[in-house]
Image (tube, rainbow, N blue to C red; front, side):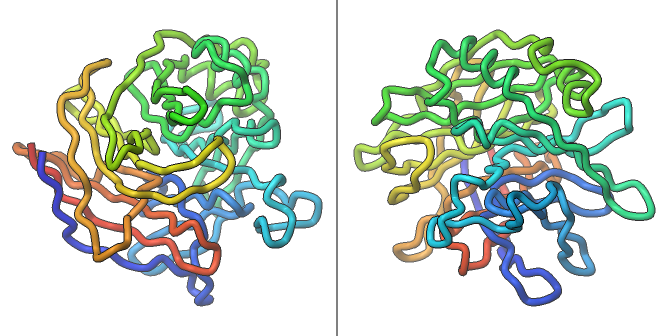
Length: 305
């Protein structure tokens, strides 16, 4: 597997403000919805520019969150974005990482006229179900990526070697998840099962761990991964490498590191399929700089098998 960075650009809103902590990306209307994991707004990236889209009401009066401001514990930490169909129509489902109780929410965002709208749900019961399926304490959850495979959502747990947690996935009933996300059923009613675990290898002694996933037309899944030296699911740590890995069910078919610019490692947090070709795919990838003052970037990647 070979990776080529064809183009990359800084993400800024029309006001000049940076898109912060880009953590997921999914098709949305005539463009792409980019989640910011430390804000109540996502970014709608379109050919004409990038505009904010509210995906949560203000939390305790705050719209953005940071360690410096003492509000990091409030952040929604939306780390996965996936197109789904719910009874209210098609939209993008944003899912919190589950790494704290405050991060067990969803936001179902639709682009219907005259303007985008959202519905927020507390999915704590589902996160407890997923933790049970993964056979781990709830405090070790860090669900950072998701993609849809037919009637199931494959939800990826980011590994953490320091905590003895491997990268893994659990399949969730996507129709029931959509109903829970708009409040039609209780989150405990959503079934979860078929756990898969993955060994993506390590770079300089730091294991690669899944950060997002995208389903391919041939049934395989491409995941982004980061080798980040962090002691827990909440705190950031130094990232020594980033990679893509090709998965066929629970088998790892290929792993390739991303090209690096000097000493900087591009920590991909979100992946989306732009197009499929006979010898590979083109992807959009969003990169989190782990600094609220540095704009996130969007990269156009060409991946060849």
